[in-house]
Image (cartoon, rainbow, N blue to C red; front, side):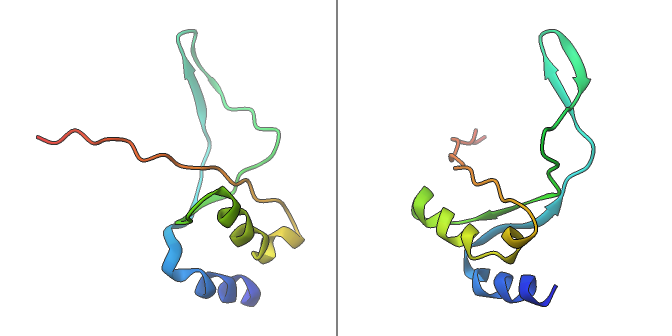
Length: 84
């Protein structure tokens, strides 16, 4: 836990969403609603600000969680918001 906390401090200025736990999920499609079946369990989401995917990968590689599990890295795209 101490190593995790050190890593969080080291990337603190880049954290957008911090270690938000995820609960049970469902998939929704035109066919209806089904139980979410995941090949790999996702425990939570942490979003970091990075210049590009390569920089995000370097940040993820420095996380001590990689010693006991894996980290999925994805790019997030900014969507235009509807302003009223």
